[in-house]
Image 1 (tube, rainbow, N blue to C red):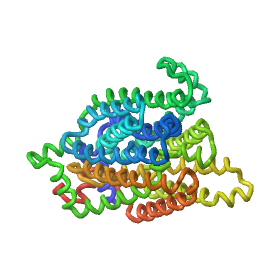
Image 2: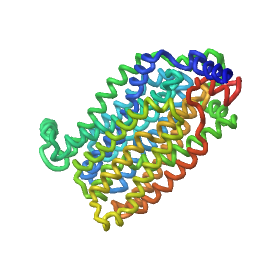
Image 3: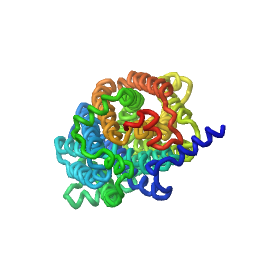
Image 4: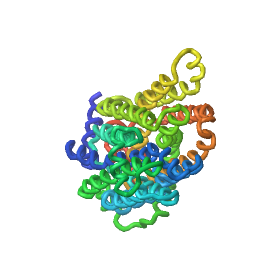
Length: 468
């Protein structure tokens, strides 16, 4: 027992690369977590105004599928991630924080000023690429700047920001939507540009929502460019001396290690199967509420807003616990909730026959799905993804996985619009969702690592030996 206690003490006090002082790591975590606000915010900002853009530009369901395909939800983020992961490992995490959000602001500006579908598509793509570039650096930096006993908590804070973004964006969307409490502001702003009626006026509510993202991105950029470089990255670069730093060499190093390859396969599997479901809900949730649930745009945004509020509250509740209890407990709880939500949708006909109202079904689905997102696979993907790889290709490995996941999510988004067919195929789509979530549950429970309470360099040594 004494030996075990000494071993745990060594692990917890190992290497300054295991973390900084608590206040410092919390401050940097909050600054970097704004990227998650902007990531989810960009997805949901497009989603909340999707029907408005559809009416304004006379878009088909396939047009909507293409917007999802190249957005921060899918391909745009996939392209950005593989670039951003490599850049973060070669030039540093701070390099990404210094320049990336300037690209994000450009993309948001394109959306705000869009007058046609190609311009809107370009804005979604540029914004999506910026989101992808920032993700590997953000999660890596949070883990590398955290104390060993607060790493899970800090990742949860980042996840909470991923919930706060949609919560506020949907709230703005609801208030600024046609018939909303602040629609008068939209009419006043649109009037300055000579727009006074019709779909051209209504879509101004979405333009204003995107403007709020522009403001947050500017604030986040000013905070992040003042951060210090990760001590873990600096130490690793000093040890490497002169080596081949090309992208191909980075991938060669990654794929030459069997443990790293197996880790990529495991993490990509749990995140892909969950994200195929979450990406559809992130982009299409208000649209689904409107088409399948027959809700107004305002009510659809309100219900989605409640879902994200539950995300924030759930993550807030588990954040002080995730470093104290086995990760599997939270992982299983989140996925069981997700499966229950979609099972309700599949059984909705029987529930309606039993006297349960359609709105009650939507509310139950919203609550369960919100709990799943608050205790989601993404928390553990971000946590394990930053723990299970050496510093030399930590961000690059995450970028590769994010590329795989968001790239395939882009394809699935197009397939989903075909299956969904404006609401007619929603039952079949729900069955697909359940199947994907079951895979994520089984693979995650089977392969979950035991990294809780260990410093990053200790985890690296245990998995890869002294050579990394």
